[in-house]
Each structure stands twice: as C-alpha cells, then as structure tokens.
Length: 385
Image (cartoon, rainbow, N blue to C red; front, side, top):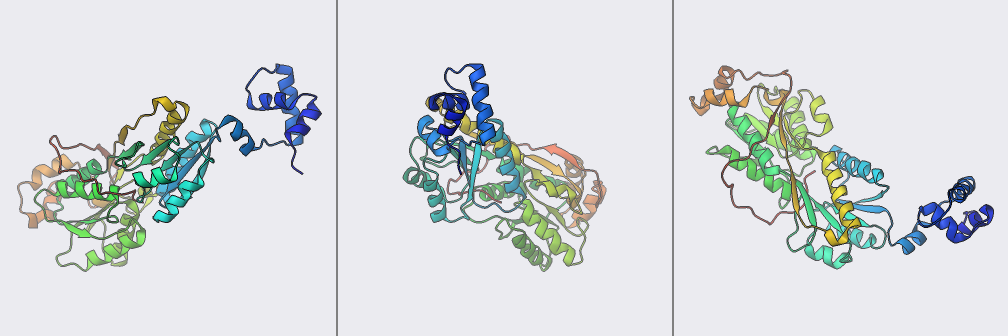
C-alpha cells in the first residue's frame, strides 16, 4: 500500500505542512523536527507524489529530451552528457525519439506539457510552427544542431563546416586527389554543412558524391560502389563515423588495404573510432559536452525566465589524424604535392613521408578560412547520426 504524507505526519507527530516543508527543505522547520520527519519518511519508505508537488511548486525537476533516434554511440554519448549534468542539478530526464517523423515529434512535444520544466530538442522536423502549436510559450527550449528561424529558442551546434573543410584540406595535403564524399540525408543541417565544407576544401578538385543516411549500412553500400568505380577514388570522407565504419567493412570485404589502396575518414570521433583497425581518422566533436552545455543553457532559462537569451553557440571541432589515412603532418605533404601532377599523387605521398599505416595518432586544430565562405543557406533540418 502506498504511504501517504498524512501517515508520515501522524507517525512523526507533526502537521502535514511541516512534513512538506521538511521534505522539500523549504520554510521554517527546526533541525530536530526535520531529522525526525526524514527518519520517519525513510522508515515508512514514503515517496513524495511528484504530480501533487509540481502543482504546488509549478516545477517537475524533469527535463524532456527529443532526439531523432537513440541508436548508436553518438546518441548514447549525448544522453550521457545531458544526464550527468542533469543529475548534478537534481533533475531527471524524459527521453524520446521522433524517428524522423514529424507526427511523432509533434505528439512528443504535446506529451511533455506539464511534465517537464524545459526541453532539449534535436529533430530534423522541428520548426517554429511545430514549437508554437505544440508547446506553451513559457516552456524554455534549447535546440541542438540547428537554429530554427522564427523561433525564440537558444541553439547549440558544432562547427560542421570548419571540421569538414579541415578534413578535406588534410586529405589533399596528404596527396589524395580523387576524394569521394558520402553525404548524410538531404535537408539535414549537419549533413549540408559538412558537404559545404567538403566542397570548399576541394578547391579545383572534382567532387565525387555518394548518397548516405548516417547509418553503417549506407556506408557499406557506398563503399561497394566506390570499389567498382573506374578510376577509383583514392580517399573517402564519410559525413559521420557510422558510415565510415561501413566503408571500412566494404573495403575489407573487397580485399583492399586501408590506407594503402584507399584512405577513409569520418566525422564525430565516436568512442569506438580509435579502436578500429585501422584506427579511424575523423573530426572530433565533444559529444558529451554538447549535451552538458545544452542542459546548462536550459537550466539558466528555467531558473531565470526574464533573462532568457536566444543566442546561438557553436562548439569547435578538431581534426584527429589516425591510421586510416596516414598520420603525416599536412603542412609538409602540401609543400611536395603542389609541385607534382595529380596523376602522380601516390608518389607524392611517399615523397612527403605519408605513412601507409600504424602511426601514432596526432591531432591538429581546425582552422577556418580567413575570408567568407559560400553563402549560408537555411533550408537545413536536424542532426546527423
């Protein structure tokens, strides 16, 4: 039988109001009385009724998290970052996936009414209309990966463009000339920004694009397609690590060597990337920090509604060079490669000292171009993984 607050009050010999003040640590209660109430509550295994308490305090100490999916290391790391920060501040999480379905996304938003104090949303389908139609105006929201034009929500994203630009320039500096790109789903904000960085980094090189959807199977199919190309690309840059892992599997099944026959690179630096064989060259994103910062921004909005900001924040990304494309310094490679013909890129890599495999990982900070990049388009949607 569920223990009620009245039973605790009767057992402790105090009023219901005193029990409430003691448990919630609010209002005047003597130390001895507080200890007695808490001891009785613990002995009876009393659990405060969250709904009733929220009606009084108008808070639930619960944060809603809406993601496009919950499969894979990216989302587990993201949720971990949010959860650690939430528990540190005494909040619980209510997590749901929209499965990239607008109807499910809107249903989830409606479900959170009165059940959460704020929301962290990462969804390709979310827009200002969906937020306005399905959430109270007073509910604070922090968006991950993309701003929503017309909304009054703060947003946090990673430097997708700069990371992809740095990766493509590194591959070119290492002597690779036919660099294929496995892109994410059309309309996805992160995917479009990474594609933009790849295109800018190619310079005068010809782009080679393959369709993908951020899943390993799409990467595997792209890898099979690449192996059949004539002439075959000498490097593949996948828009996320999941697809890069699929490419690695396809190359292995095709009997070729990475990076000797084909260099492979990804984006995100999920935990398993460094443990692959060969270890994956990728763009590092601090995934757990992305979640932690979103939670902290949301709590500031919850605790100080009058000081809510709609600022957009971008986390830096970092190039991490590992064995899957060689680990030579890009600057040295670029000096040699500039003087050779594109058809002699393999010789250029040897002259530049680019190793074939098994080098110790090195990191290089991402740099953005000094001038303005291509025009930014706002027809993007959610997040990659």
